[in-house]
Image (cartoon, rainbow, N blue to C red; front, top):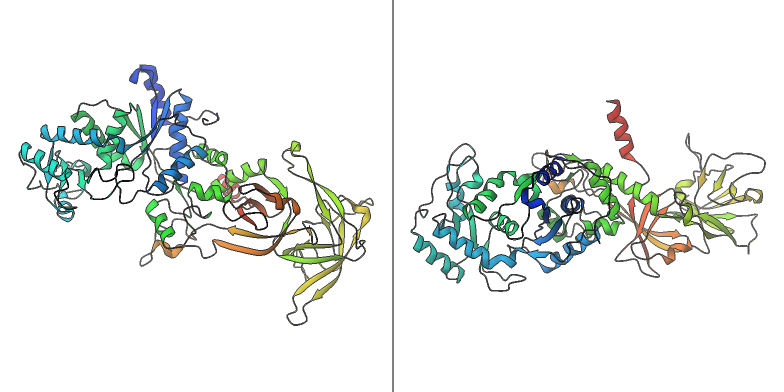
Length: 566
């Protein structure tokens, strides 16, 4: 499976690649890669990178690798590897057997480090992490040379080999590149290449007790795999001189690193470290909680790969960082769901309605349209009987101005059904709460139209009390109440902006019979309510659980209209 064709996008990265192809650079090849670290689940920001790297390879007839940057065993797990593979496949990308790990290259990376030592370009340093920070300098002041910087080559080779053999404790020594402690680019101030970390690796076991750093590993892995265009996010722009230095110093094949702006989304956080805090603290129900911006969370919420692709295509590829309004993502999800979701009726807060003049034992099957956007979807049969449920919000004993739904003496249309008029209200004797409505129906209005031409101002949804099924419906909202939770006010932590109403679990809901056959992951539009998905984990036969994917309310249209006026 490969990514489906979409409209051909244009951006500065594709312009670079087109020029390289025209000039014959890299022999006319295009070879990209997606290199996640398996220290958490992928999120929507990674989707942008996945679709860009695999998309460019597909557009230009090239290749794209999936490569795990597994150089830090203390934070990496097989669970994360498996989830990433599943998420990349779910988005529609295929690496064609080119699945690699940085750990595949540990032996070669070690030999290249030895080569740097022999060239006088790397040294073993005994400074602690804190001492190294003190020597590094600032953005305006140069750093200071390590007192171990000029160790003889033979001593460095001996110490590095002993580091590999596990002779020294964690943190006691590092291998550093010898570049320039006065460089205005702090990344070139003798960066660490290897650190001692006596931890078992999920693939190599206990073979290694020293592990290479990302900046060193990444460029060499790109080179060994024959990558032509190493596309990464903007925070690595200042690391590009280091990328170039390693490859040029070792005289290795040299891909081109190109940076683009990462995806930042309002009302959420995109740091895997922050997301892991939410998971570990129990603030959310795991990485796949539908409130999370993770791909597994979005999948559980009912979002499709097509919606994510449409969103990423719409925001494009830019050079400057910005925050994308989550309303645009919701718009893309809504547009996608509108085309594919079967319609169904669900009553979330049931209010009993008795049709006094409807035959007590009669049951009709009414034809209801499955999807007005797709005539080929056909219709379904929904049972209609004397006792119904409607939503509590669709009745007001004392209706406010511009409230056109059901009220005493008022007539409304039942979706696909009849006109009904409220003739009596039953209340709880103790609380005064409305518990039951008595209505009459007009048998001449079947299908929702009156032969005498009279009109009603509201159409409401319903389910048959006898035939409907109990269900739990979960309403998910934005995880944070602040547009940018990382911009915390003084004295506040980013977690202070967690939205306390991000999850509302509604029990006692009633849904039409067809939803009893819904499979986990199946999507529906609950008429007048929003788009929903049968939960991937908790929805089973006899225990119906639906997650709201997105509301029907289109905030993005309002934002676009306001921006146009400005």
